[in-house]
Length: 184
Image 1: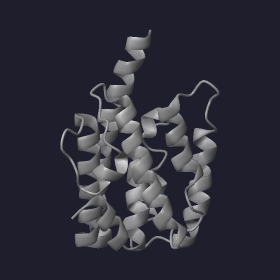
Image 2: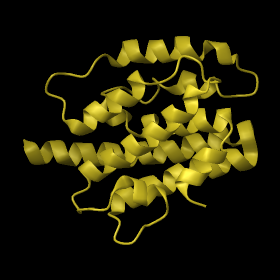
Image 3: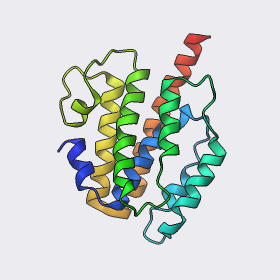
Image 4: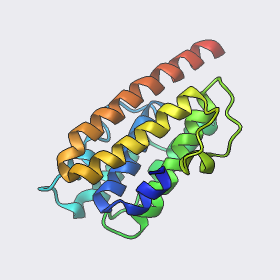
């Protein structure tokens, strides 16, 4: 099943987790530590109060701040994901946010991948993967995996979805670090 189809079929928790996972993997571009988004992950559990989501999003925004004037396109896209996070994870807007985060995260990975990938992001999300650059391919796999885990296990799959996201964050952190050394 394509990523577009998985997003279309996801429930509210899956959509919120999918968007959050994309944002989480791009955290190295925002300059935050690995724990900043942890309260949002905790808010997706069965026992959590979904009404607290907006407050937790606002705390994350406060901690991560606004984009710096010198931020590049990848960092601006990551800041845009956080800025667009809905105040209510149960609202209709969470589907649009999850979809936008998916696109932004794939664009970010494409910008950071030294291997060119000239295909439009939408074609990748629809399943056309021929000639895909390695970093974009890995991000696409992670997005699909997170949505499949949550579709199959609901809240019980959150820990595994977070592990998938953490792995992707480590990869992106290494890419960002390598890129910074190359510019110095």
